[in-house]
Image (cartoon, rainbow, N blue to C red):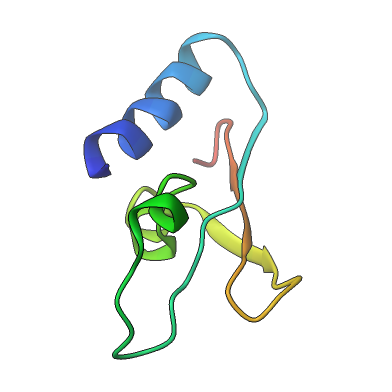
Length: 72
């Protein structure tokens, strides 16, 4: 999962994307992650790839963005 998230950033740069966005889940501390929940990605994976949290629409869901460009 970490390699895939990092690859999205590299591919985004290659094709000239300005912003990448994802909708990962953040399970409550100490709770087991169900595989179907993890299919959208886990928050920590996106954070490690350079994404930043933009919104938290539900208790577990996050909206993350990675802005690409000269400063990234």
